[in-house]
Length: 66
Image 1 (tube, one colour):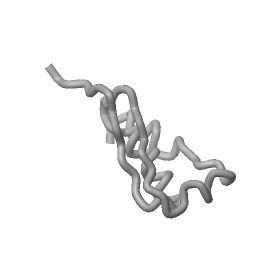
Image 2 (cartoon, rainbow, N blue to C red):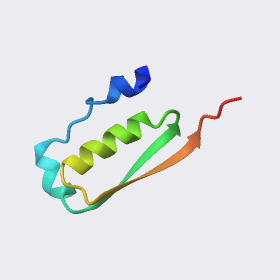
Image 3 (cartoon, helix red, strand yellow):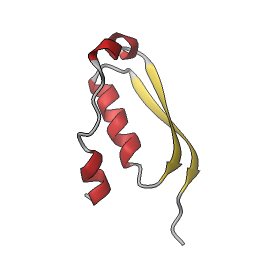
Image 4 (cartoon, rainbow, N blue to C red):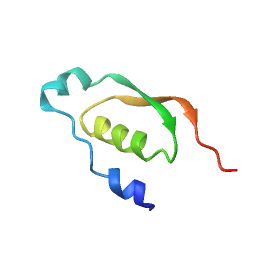
């Protein structure tokens, strides 16, 4: 597990007032740049634990290795 994955592992929490808005829903996350995927993964895990039926991610750009 890289440092970035460790940094965001439990960094996100869904505010309880939004729990009913997420439960049973398909949630789409939008990220500007996909680097390691750690942030999208951590957010998706939080949403799934909070009751989201599914989570998808859309990114605008991706970092590539040269």
